[in-house]
Length: 250
Image (spheres, rainbow, N blue to C red):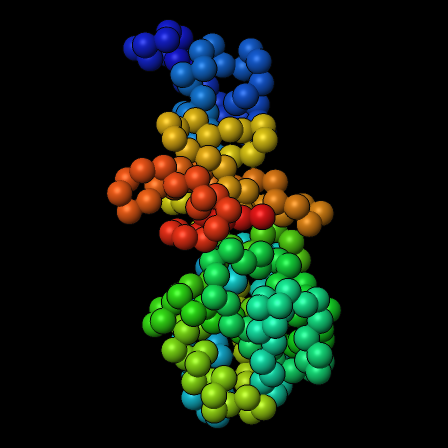
């Protein structure tokens, strides 16, 4: 806790139990200590593995991270294409009960918790997501939220998704997710956490509210640099349309 505005000296203090205390009046001697205070917050990520098998062939996959889910989730069933859950924004995939639902996404602006809830409401026993902008990397699953996830949710590359869609619809797929635990560190690899109470402290940063969901609403995010275009100029339209790095968020 710095005791002068120039950050020349200060006093070491115990981290607060509630990270919001870093912004409470009187908790810090000077506002310059806020960033150090925020570093007290631990960032944890799931450690585990996923397995997707179709016709006795394993397809490279990744599991959905940061969801409230059982340590082992496994299901099998015939594959059905439920891409209209994203393409048309429908709430139910007709005919999906007791099937493994394949969803193609052509945008980075996906509310994973909303998609998984629609899949569960449709009766899907498992969910496979492939993104058209991700051609070869199966390690593309994002961060779900801290909402409950009741079915195995895995991500695959666009190329594998295209092959499944054209040749294996209706065939039996086995999907398994095994969460082994969590690994935690102080500094989030995605940047500083932000919320209405904890604004971004860096210059030209904003809070995209894409991390934690409570009662169907995003309440936290990771601070991101304000979007720019290919010439380095501010790109305000990227706040509404997914032009560059997935900035657009409802």
